[in-house]
Image 1 (cartoon, chains in turn yellow, blue):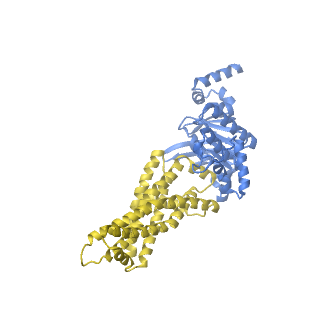
Image 2 (tube, helix red, strand yellow):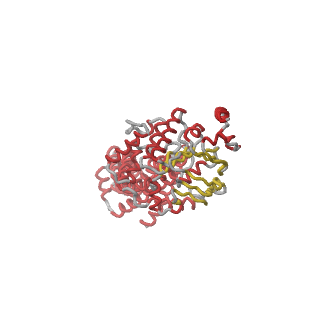
Image 3 (cartoon, chains in turn yellow, red):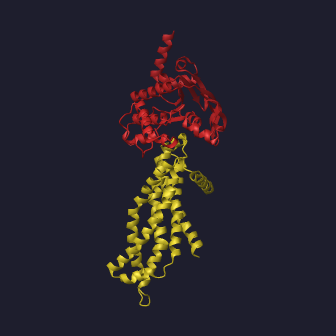
Length: 246
Length: 255
């Protein structure tokens, strides 16, 4: 199947997904379950990575700005910008594409190969709407919180790294973090987060829903889903940056 | 009653169903048999609307399924119960939630009413005290029974089963066969079963449809299958020595 066919099929899938849920009670139950599976269960890994990467970013910045002409507050400023603009929304989304994307593809793919999706269709359930819509809504709802948390922890990790290693002073770092605050950059990061969240929910769902074969096919589809989600996040990141910041 | 007229279905250049015409009566268990690749599964999936026919019609009590409006299609779906080959129970839900799922989705019953209906269906398939178990904790036969309970919980008019005995030991297979037959008689359901199990053919087959290369090669009752001289049926059904001997004994008795 060529790429155009896949793109067409993906948008046709979205057409089925964005319909009114057949039973709102079941939809809300699924939504809460997905918030737990796709959001809450990702909290640990995102917190852990954000904290340490924030520390590394601050240390790297400090080590590369060793000049008497550059104030130490610039380290906090540069770390803040790197974390808010790129690390939190993009890097964390790529991590989530791996963790959550493979979960989505394998769970929907297994339902496909074990005829559970056929069972839903025979009952008269819009299986795409039932399975995919709660995933999209939960990621769109929860990931902005997750990425905001990643931003905060990344900046905090940077501060702690400076204090513990003595590479820069905590006060200078905080001064740099407070320097030249532009609210639009947060909006830019949130727009990116929402676009990436949508991709993380839909691309793996597509790969899982249309899988053909058995368990090996599900495994291959999971890998494909992670690869394609990552590629699309990187491409979307480029175009969003060009559109919103230039 | 389900009436199929000149049904054709293919995938790309491969023609799978080549003009099948037949009918299935209410209150009777009809069995579809044939070799692997003869088109049984595609035929069954066409009946339940998972495949759209290329040509021909399938009508359910006079209503042609390809001409349904959205609302009619939704109503028709609720008249169908389906037991899949691998049971197709939802892994993440326990037995009770699996059986309750169609009720939650399509009715406005209270939790108590739904629970009563679920317990009735589970009781009917002789599966008590398993409400909270997950599908992975059940044996193959129990999973099939849960699948039957889920299929009958909405009081279907039509019941379809895709190889309900596959992977089961002979004793459990007989239990499942008898259960399907009892339910068919009790609720006057039009039941269509796709099977490889010749024991089911002999035991519960009130109508047998034999498919070969996507065409209807023979149809009749389980008694008629003993007498038929149709070469394709004889080759397929009596390929095992056991059934060959059963047939000889039956024919000798008739003489």
